[in-house]
Image (cartoon, rainbow, N blue to C red; front, side, top):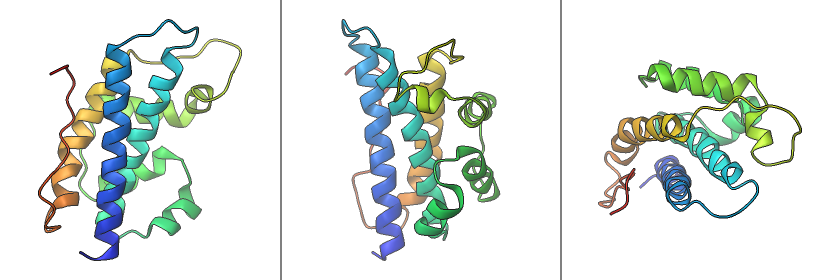
Length: 155
């Protein structure tokens, strides 16, 4: 397997891990003052990594993506759409909210004030859509037989 494909598979696996961890934490609410912040962060990071995995698989250099776009999901999503990704309405809204608010940073650090966030199920749906659309493209021709499946429910 060539290095770009290995990298794309690794990015996809990390995206899946973050999304599945968010789902697991969501289903096992804990007694903490800001229990939802890590869950939002996991969803936000999963979305970014799904996008980057597709871009690397379709020939974009990861270091160039990092230098030109960093963690800016809006241009990453636009590049993915040029590669054939079909964002749902909710997907477009989540990307816009991530790009135009401090939601991502406020999921990592204390930010006083009101934050506009969607319910978890919206982020779950976006991650499920990205996982389904991108997974087969990333793994195609990789000779890797275990493609992670995102499970939205226990079991």
